[in-house]
Every structure is written in C-alpha cells, then in structure tokens.
Amino acid sequence: MPKLPGIRQRDAVRVFEKLGYRIARESGHIIMTNGKTRLVIPRHNPINAMTMGSIAKDAGLTPEQFRALL
Image (tube, rainbow, N blue to C red; front, side, top):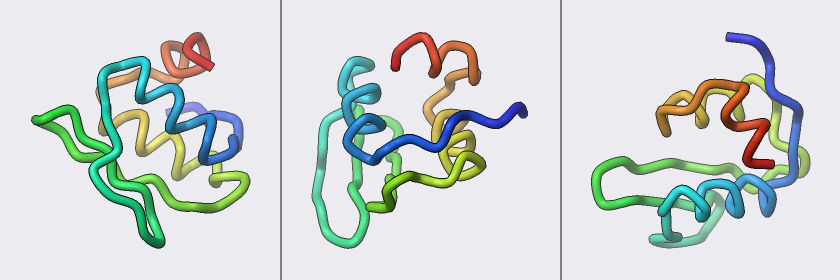
C-alpha cells in the first residue's frame, strides 16, 4: 500500500466523520465507530504515514480515496 501523508489527528477524525463514523470515546487514543467497524486513531501530531494507511485500510478506503477526502 502506498504511503499516505502524515496528517494531524483532527484531520483524520474529520475525514472519518464524513464517512459516518462517530467518536465513541477519547483517552490516549480516539475510538471511532460506525456501528460495525471500530477505528483507533492515535493522538499523535502528525500520525505516522504507515499508521494512517493502516487505519484507512481498516475503514475500507484506498489511499487515493482517503486523499480525496482530505
């Protein structure tokens, strides 16, 4: 999988909210869910590119789709 850019955690949350994910809880990580899938977003700024690629893959997005939503 090609790398995604390292982005801020707030930008990642915004992208997944566009896809219907909602914040379930916040602590050291942000846990988001759409009722079926759970995503764990670290509170790093920026989030490592490989980590972001893995999170996008868990949400069913290709790197190109994720970039388009930024």
